[in-house]
Length: 162
Image (tube, rainbow, N blue to C red; front, top):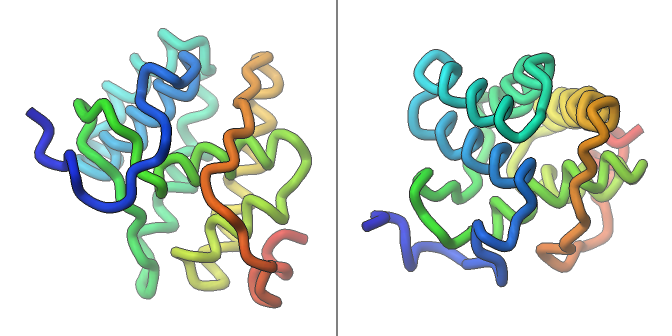
């Protein structure tokens, strides 16, 4: 049984509600938060390949996830890889990537602003743009799910979105 069930705010979705690409990305994020880049790389590559996500997506995905390792970053609630429920933070991460794919980097920055200081926010937004472009090139489009109500973009996050 998953040790994270019941923790934090759940989203209205479960893993079975996600597209194949969303499941692969979410599983990769969960693995990375549990094992780090070196420990998760092989399994992330396999999962992404099965979903049709090119290997070139790994570098910007690792860059994005690495921004959460910086000093001053608040960690999003990331559940264990086996958990069938999706946390509100996980849903926000997926929706921020979908927002970038839809040309709305400001919304993505609003999501990330809740966790990251300015420099990390700028790096994360750039990594998301690169990851979104790779997914677009592979004809993988993530759906917008609007996981949380957004507040107006702070001036700091507005700079990162530009």
